[in-house]
Length: 296
Image (cartoon, rainbow, N blue to C red; front, side, top):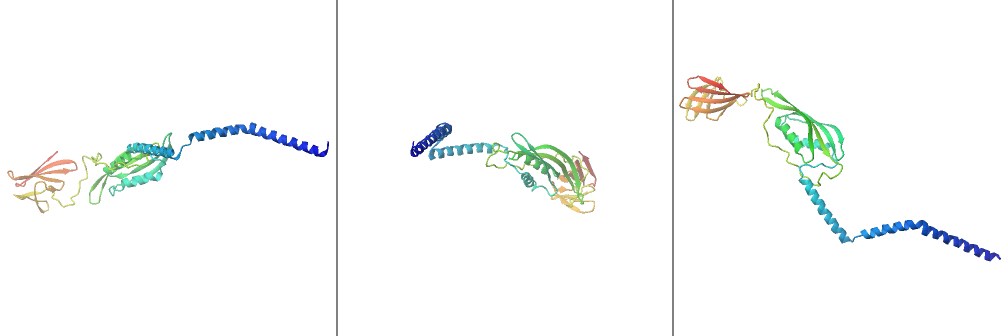
């Protein structure tokens, strides 16, 4: 066998090996991958929609999202997403902006508490304020759209007297407040409107019924104590105080600590009702320079 024939047979053998190896790789090794790609391609082809169908689905999803958001926004309380610690400071500052000048609030951040479905910050609020200012703060916290709750509270009454003798009745308070937030939007709506946070004034339950402090006579009103009825005329009654200052008063006029309630022309008397620190006194002056009083 000549050399040329040997080379030809060798090339044919190499070609056969290449064909056999390629076939094994294509139909054995690659077959599984090709089948997987075909399945994936079939799935994509089955789920493929045209542009109009996709836009229709998008519009339906937008309407559904708007409905769900509307339902959430109608709820009295929502739990916001990813709340910052500083948000509660801003909230308290806005609520306390219209407090009386002597009322104040201190805010102290305490802790972050993680729960299964939500988290919350805890804060300590403390200060001194008039009762209705404290009530406004409590109302705003409890009624806020973003969920907040007072966990514990403590109150004590406090009386301060100015240099001119005017008493002020305050409340010392301490609150522990929880401010809730969530990591997802299942508790919150995209657009929220804050609830009404300004309550109507209520009776001051810390205001003492009997008070040692009496308001000073800053307006120079008639002090009925040791006063004298001088004369009764159709226009009213002439009355002088202990210093000799004369006042012309009519029914309903204000005096120090009370009011002139009645002028009795038949008995030549005038009647007053005074509030002396919660003790009600009825005082009568007559032209005979004799006065009587009655406590209630």
